Image 1: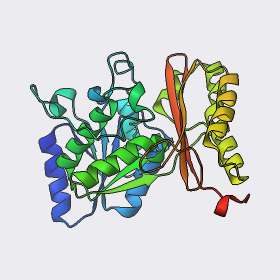
Image 2 (image 1 turned 90 degrees about the vertical axis):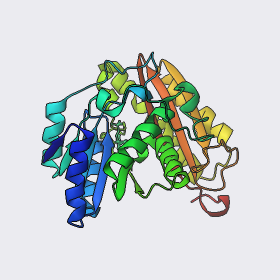
Image 3 (image 1 turned 120 degrees about the vertical axis):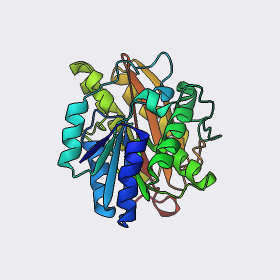
Length: 288
Ligand code: AMP
């Protein structure tokens, strides 16, 4: 496995693979790798011949009050996981390598960034889009793999790639969960034992929404209220949002007659967790 710390290094490495007509797959991550990241690597391994994982805790996607400096970092552990997964090259640039002094350009995707997490994390998606576009320009992969766990991020990246004619296929991969339903996240390790138990409420509330929609409930407002109750009772510190939106436009919908994205963001102490589920109503609103 090649470890590349500079843009020049990773470009050479990928150029060699491309010359050998290998299909390049890219898995962007912020490290502290877990089974969720591993599932993306495995999907990349299945459909590509040369897999590049990137590990970069991107400062531009953290607001000043967020957890950039304490975000978990474990380079040795991450490299071991990449090696185990048969990753061909890992790109681990420093912040200075990725952001030249005086950089003035960033990418802003309109509207899709105004809903869900957008208002609670100003500038976050601009940071994500800018770093992902840079990674695409540096690596020029044929495909890139992202988790459905970050559904808004996935929708925004799909939009960006379409709008900017970036020649990369975006592949969404299902959310990997703990046995009790909690979506794996590098931030789960911040939770106290009590918060870890309380955090089950995210998935529980999504399961309730799915059950109610499958049983014919079409009133989004009613479902959001019921989900609020579950999350509130769990002892969560704060609920940023619980929303039912169109999976593509991310606009709030009131009447569930097509597949919807049910998404929520909840805080436990300092830790902010997100989760979501795409749910299709039964045909013609009839109970399944
Ligand atoms: P992160 O390191 O948190 O920026 O995540 C890197 C990639 O892994 C993103 O595309 C995430 O959506 C994806 N990811 C994170 N957690 C999970 C999970 N539990 N299941 C599937 N993909 C995930």
